[in-house]
Every structure is written in structure tokens, then in C-alpha cells.
Image (cartoon, rainbow, N blue to C red; front, side):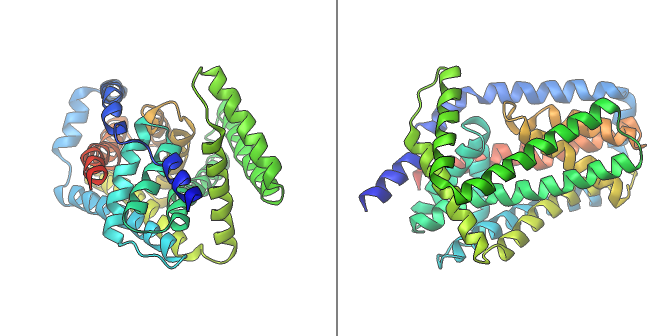
Length: 344
């Protein structure tokens, strides 16, 4: 019982965190404004405004509906994870927690902050520590796995179409090599858990010293134990329903982008949509120093879609509209939700 309380305290951020994140919000807004001001320079303002004026309203509304269903898919992902260990969490509450935790994670610790917030709020709803730990760990694993699959598919299509320069090809292969090395390390660590945990603690301590930040090994050890507990659940067959939730989350997010292409009068093929979707979001996840991959996602999407024949003004309007619906609006909805969940 004492260990469970200690784990809970280590994983749950303190109540003042929501207040402390306020100082980072201006930076996030500044980055967003910079991207939204610079990206349209790829096309003339007049052309972009013309695209906006002619956008089809019903397709924009369908894009908004797709985002709502996307977050219900995220709620189902959390619901199915805790159900694997005979705990209960409604899909609606799971969606609210996903929204709030994503906003906190942007400004406080990235995936670790997101996972800690998810753990705390799921735990406060009466879910046991084991299921709460899985809820804080597995969603990132499932969602990132799907992005890696989409990213690899996009690279294969670009290579087949000879749309990649030598430098781009080298960069993409380097990223994929890093991902596969990470998977190999985790696979080795699953059979050598103590050695893997010690290595992760050493690396985390090194980065903390480099950044001149205080470091507590206990938090890292808990995170590694939760990761292995999540892998154990997956091996026992508890991956099917969470995988469905992750597919719904990513699928309806991609559908949001597709509806914006329809709204702008430039319907694209599924292959073109896939190439311009998976890689930029994967790069955004890897660029952990930039909240939400701001700047990386937009610029990479613009380069890929214009390279695949989408007119510049349409690409700019579609990408910015998609990011407003899929990133900015959920982010700013998530902050008041986080305050509500923290008080509740």
C-alpha cells in the first residue's frame, strides 16, 4: 500500500503545475503565430484568400465532426486499456482526459508529462494503480506505432516515385534506423530488465546533468516498470481493442485533413494523402523540443504536398486549417479541462 502511494506521488504532477505551465503558453502562441505568418509566404495572400472564400462549408463541418470522433476514439483507447485489467472508465471521460493530458504534455515533459497527467486523472476516477499505469503508457505506444507504419509506407511511396533527394532519403533512413534500434533495445530489455533499467537511469541522469536539472532515479524506474507491464499486457492478447482505438484516432485525424482538401476543391488520392500525413507528424513527435512539432509538421507537409503536385495556395490553406482543427483548438480546450480535472 505504501509503495502504491509512493508511485502515485511520483507519477502525478503537483497541483501548481497547471499554473506553472502558464509561463510557457506565450512561447507556444508565438511559435504558432510565426508558422501561420511564414507558411503563407509560399503562396500569395490573394490566392490563399481566394481559396478560403471558395471552401465548401459542408466539408469543413465534416472535418470538425471527424475531429470529434477522433477524440472519442482516443477515449475508447483508454477505456479498452483499463478494461483489460477489469477496471472501468467511460469513453467520454477517456476523451476528456486525453484532451487535457495532451495540453499539459505540450508544456510539461512531453510524453512523460502526458502520461503522468493521464495516470493521475484516471487514478482519481477510482481505477486501480495497475490500470492507471497502463493508461498512462500504452496510448503513446499505440499511436506512435501507427505513425511509424504510416511513415514507412510514405517513404516507400516517395522512393518508388523518385520524389526524394539523396539528403532527404538519408535523413529518413537515419530516423527509421533510430526507431528500429529503439525497438531492438526494448526487446532486449524485456529479457534483461534490471540491466535495461540501470542503463536508462544512467542516460536520464546524464541528460539531467547536461541540462543542469535535478534528477530522481525513482521516477525513471517507475516509468520503465510501467513500460514492461504494458508489454506484458500486450503479450497476453490485450492489444486488439486498444489497437482499434488507436486506428480510429489516427484514421479520423487523417480524414480531417482529407475533408479540408475536398473543401478547398482539390481532392487528393489516398496515396498522396498518406505520404503527406504520416511523415510530418512522425517528425513532429521526434522533434520533442518543439511543442506539438510546431513548424516541423506544417513545413514538412507543405513541402511534401506541393512536391506531389498540390498547388501552393491550396496546400497552405489546407495545412493551416487542419492544424487549427487538430492541434490548436484541442490544445486550448485542453487547458481548462485540465484545470477542471485537477480540481475534481
